[in-house]
Length: 69
Image (cartoon, rainbow, N blue to C red; front, side, top):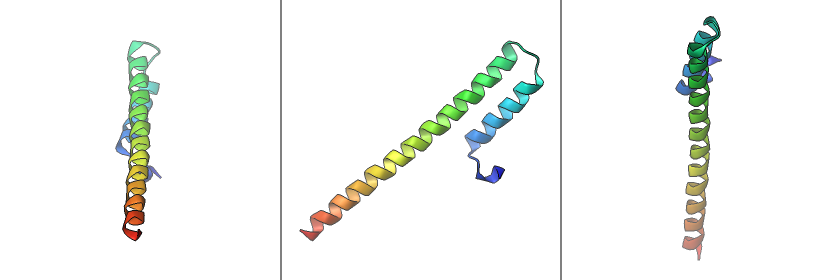
């Protein structure tokens, strides 16, 4: 299943695993925040990809409709 994961998701999972091994404190919190930041970047990237595809498809559809007229 891990092959389905993006590099950012894999790095986030690794950071969380490392954080779990640490005692409670600043170092552990830093790794957890790093993981959350990586997941945020991954999600934003996915949202941008979906939006970009929607825009491209809309333009292609408009172009095809203009050619039909």
